[in-house]
Amino acid sequence: MMLLWVAIGCTGSLPPKASPDGSDSGDSGRPDSTPIDDSGDSEDSNNPDAEVGWIVASAPRAEDAGGDGTWSAGESLTVYATLTNLRSEDYNYSPGILVFPENDRVTVPDPGGNWLYALFGNSSSELGVTVTAASDIPRGTFIDFRIEVTSLSCTGDGSFCLDPAPISLQVRVE
Image (cartoon, rainbow, N blue to C red; front, side, top):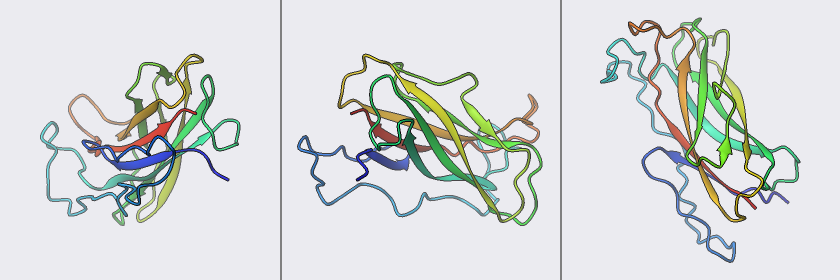
């Protein structure tokens, strides 16, 4: 039986937390899919050269190191997201993900990401980043993660950059 409590959604609003008795209210707050703009016509306001909607992250999930489905204080957790290339052209500029825990009691290795060499057109690949909860983090603490799309080849002038298009994941420490 999987005990790991995980919630997904778009950054900006987090799904409702489970009731104190652990029962489900019937509304998980999880979208069926993460909305994306795959038109390629929009622009990132911070980087007009960003490849908006070309490479997207979806399907965030988490696995605890012990494999028992419960993330405990002091234990590592791997946060996963699936990167998808929505176009037919290959993306050969090291696409990847960055994971940001929204709690300073969770450590993430520097640089906190994982990258591919390339992502073929119309394909997907799952990437994971391992984080660790502090040994004294209180049981029942909800940890929010922001997962962003990135590229190792992104330059200061904006070349080869991707729209970060953040998605979120929430995991409870048991």
